[in-house]
Amino acid sequence: MDDLFSEACARALDAADPLPGLRGEFLVPRHGDGEQAYFCGNSLGLQPRRARVFVEEALEKWANEAVEGHFTAPAQWMTYHELVRDPLAELVGARPIEVVAMNTLTANLHLMMASFYRPGDGRDAILVEAGSFPSDRYAVESQLRFHGVDPARALVEVQPDGPGGTVSMAAIERAIGEHRDRLALVLWPGVQYRTGQAFDLAAIARMAHEAGAMAGFDLAHSVGNLPLALHDSGADFAVWCHYKYLNAGPGAVAGCFVHERHARTNRPRLAGWWGHEAATRFRMGPDFIPTPGAEGWQLSNPPVLALAPLRASLELFSRAGMPALRARSQRLTGYLQALIDARLGDTLEVLTPRESSQRGCQLSLRVAGGRERGRSLFEHLCRHGVLGDWREPDVIRISPVPLYNTHADVLRFAREVERWRTTRSAP
Ligand SMILES: *Cc1c(COP(=O)(O)O)cnc(C)c1O
Image (cartoon, rainbow, N blue to C red):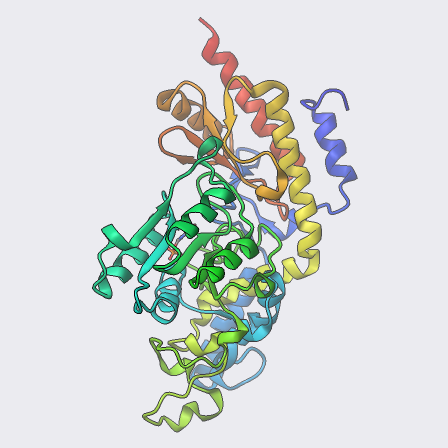
């Protein structure tokens, strides 16, 4: 295997892989006579073939049974969200009572902050990373204003202090320590979307709690990417979406975790009828009695058509198992890193930490020479069926997903970068 760049090498690595992946279970977009090398699972995961089965099942039920579909097995709509609860709990390392699929990520973040960001007693600050995902930032800032708190004073941002725009645990610890008497909430990503850096959630939750603050996590780029142990992490809440590594389709219903210690909380919440205790919901009484656990934060009856594809995807996660997927993910991303180290270091700077415990599958690659050169490479890759995604001003994100990407895909990326470099340096 002395030539990592040979097709024989990529083929051998694929053939020898103990978890060959489940590419055949997905619809991979075409490119010419073949398939794309699709590395955008961090943005929109591919469609599981069986997603259509579950969507059609719901459409058929609607056609044939109309309102009765709420009550008739299998997969009655009344309790449709429960169909994904156990596999989701398993996937994020939570108890079933701690998770629910509902709404969208940003909506869930607002619902969680409505309950877990309660300024008062001199504590009103929220600690976030500088450069957080815009929607998270807008949500946090608007929550502060909603409570009449000035973001200029109460939004504490931790600046990157490491290579490639990464943030050290020491910087987080310092910031929490510095503001410990006024912190109400620490909101942190599991994996940073721009750099691909993964964080030790249990350590961050512990630091937040020691300072007397709540700990919440945005796991948009973590769920389905890294093994999670949410219950044990001690986090108060977490939110995530299902259209990235969870392959549940554009705008799919999102996920939410509320730690069991809050299962019967009497904190204020923004309520809707589907959060009402199920046994008495249909008495339609005026008083809200919450269902214990995360389901108590549901607002509305489950959007069945937007939940159906998630069932197909969770089947595949259950079949492969997250530990085996993570091991395969480390092999694929390790191969990508090795190819870059071997021959592409003058073109691509890896911003993501090298240490595999500090990253998931994504590598964020800065193209040497600035934006124009970066765009030229990115467009070359697209034209040749290698799909990454672009982050201004000069970063290409490549995310080999263990469910459907292969070593051959990874090699194809590296060889196209080489080919582009050759044409660029020609006179
Ligand atoms: C993808 C992503 C979002 C998207 O929010 P939606 O409400 O699903 O549109 C928000 N935050 C982070 C960190 C993300 O990665």
